[in-house]
Length: 196
Image (spheres, rainbow, N blue to C red):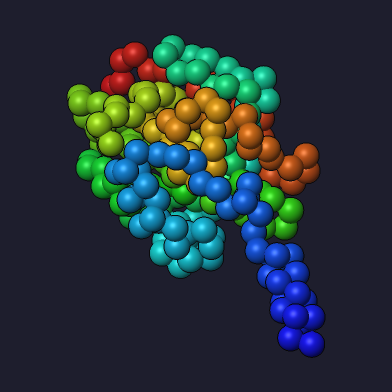
């Protein structure tokens, strides 16, 4: 009798536990693993909204890939961006990314990356850095969600989803946007060589 109950409980737990493929996080340096642990609460997008992140609604992808200047966008997606305007300023805090990025999976959103972002006007003459890495840019705003004249720097960091292009790649070939709804295929924003 006990062995039957134990077998039933084991089967139930196995069916409801996340698969190892879904639960496996990318291997990242210790500094990034610490940041990921601090940001894990945002796996729930409602917690992100509660803490001031607002959704752009749109899922962004580059199905053909693109490149502009030194930036290379591998064919793939970025996902849905949630921006916290309260964190936009002249300094970057590794524990407070300006953007959280979610991948639509069925009827839910799965946290896949964080992005550190700074408007070029705020950065001034120095290129911003976080994790010892310079942000990409300055670049024009990403159409159609940003005005072209919104010059900025950004750095995507794939903390929750493996990215064959690397942890700091702007796009991830493994991210897909839904065929319907608020999905946008983008072209690479132009790099800005002289920001005014």
